[in-house]
Length: 227
Image (tube, rainbow, N blue to C red; front, side):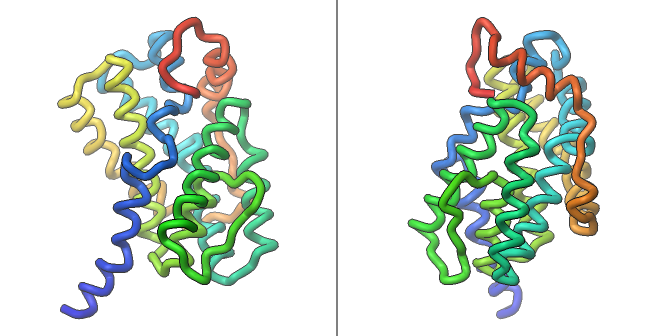
């Protein structure tokens, strides 16, 4: 019983860090989903599941998972050089100004909040821009949170953020959003499990329509979200 209690205590910070109340501003971003709704790519729950599945398996979800894993390991080893290399790659992979802002603003806000509220000697600071998955990986390693649960929690929180955006954009309602979130659980587990075994050379995406959509979103006439 003591071991189980210790394991639970180890992951408790994730509940705070990845909740909507944590001051990272995730509610302000849709990662081009707003444009996908605007042009009719996402119109109801089945098309949202298809969009999210591609996002997770072929796009930013998979990439973020790989980057988070390597940031976690670099932080666990105290390898500041490797950590900076992972972070530089993460920032360089942003395909547009909006998506660069999405990851860098959330990453900086997350790291600042965590250094202030959850300090620990192992948590290194990156004084310049920092990508969101890198920040989460750093913090989890510094607090001794296991990598498998960290990467799954990060990806599932990302799904929930995008489902919340879809509800506010109105192609689905709250009940459908709950079904979509539940349906994405298996995809999250699969992507997280594979990402743990991949190298930085395996980073890459094929969601070209969504990436180009981020440029169109910058000039969209009406916008609720920053990306």
